[in-house]
Structures are given as C-alpha cells and as structure tokens.
Image (tube, rainbow, N blue to C red; front, side):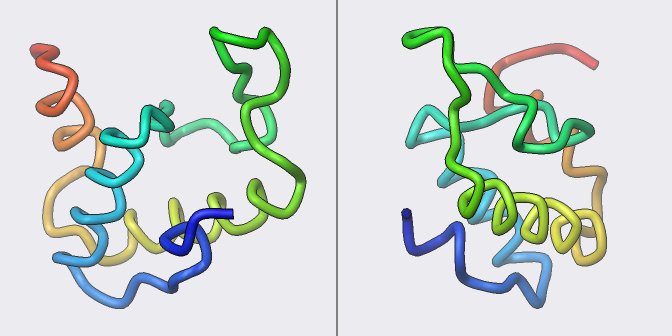
Length: 83
C-alpha cells in the first residue's frame, strides 16, 4: 500500500498533494465514488484492495473537509477537463 494512502490529511495543501499523488500514480478516480467500486481499465478487476479502499475513502473524506476548493476542480484541472 502506498504511504500516502495511509497518511491522514489535516490541511488544504496535504489534500491537494494527495490528489496529485493519485493522479501521477495513475490511481485518480471520481471522488464521489467509494474506492471499492473502482475497476482498473488495465486488468478489468477491482483497482484497490479492501484495506486500500478503507484508507482511500478516509482520505477522500478528508479532502472534502480540508480543501478550500471543490476537490473535483483539481481533478478536472489535472485531467485537462473543462467544468
């Protein structure tokens, strides 16, 4: 499991870094979803283990708590999507 999956987020900068880490590790997913529903395009299987999902869902909730902008805005910017 990646270290940043397990590291609690306590401020805006950590939340932005977490989302960027997901993006650069090719693990970014729609944050409205629970991690246990994410399927890998490469393997067509669940993208994360049960333990990873538990941590990812905690980190996602922390992002929404601490980010000063909607986390979806950063995700869309990283993916070069217009919102």
